[in-house]
Amino acid sequence: MIEDIRICFIGDSFVQGVGDPEYRGWVGRVLETGGGDITAFNLGIRRNTSEDVVSRCWQEVLPRMLPGADNRLVISFGSNDMVEENGAVRVDPVRCLENLISILDECRRRAVTPLVVGPPPVISAGAEHLARTVKLAEEMNDLCDAQRIPFIATTLRLADNLVWTREVLAGDGAHPSSGGYRQLADLILAGQWQRWIAQAHS
Image 1 (cartoon, rainbow, N blue to C red):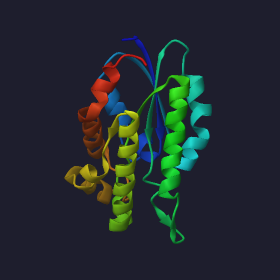
Image 2: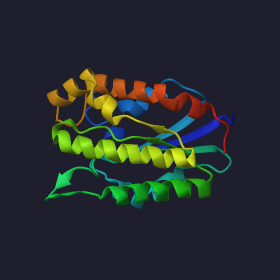
Image 3: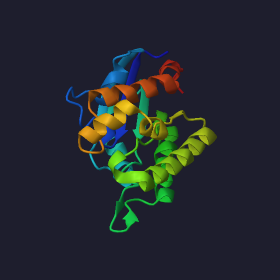
């Protein structure tokens, strides 16, 4: 395994870790487990949709990559896409999937190894938002399976997680505190993360 692993984490407020009083979120907690000489960059931005992420992805990621290193990208978005505003979702699910395909295609072109984390639920957005997010996550999973890219499902698992939901409802209705992010980090660590870190550079 190449020792110099560079990982960019790009996405929304869940990637950013909004709501965590320890300012670690799930990204920091996952990185604590180690797994090589990792240089990490958190590029999460609150309220970002897949449109926002795809538009800024490579101008932010490329300066943080290093020729000859094991360059990687963790992508997570979709929760904001499925939020309804003015009678319509912020980003159509088909367009969201197209944005994911665009990033994955560019990863392949640039020899960057991707991993996709599914969109967490926005508890305060209600049952219809959850149903839309679950469907989107399933389609993301199918897309990643077809391309042999690891996908980590989070939506239903967190919607049914008592720690996550309790902390979200005690907070802003969308983001958990430190315990909820620990739950999300544990899902990621149990769902292909270690295997992805250990795999040889493509």
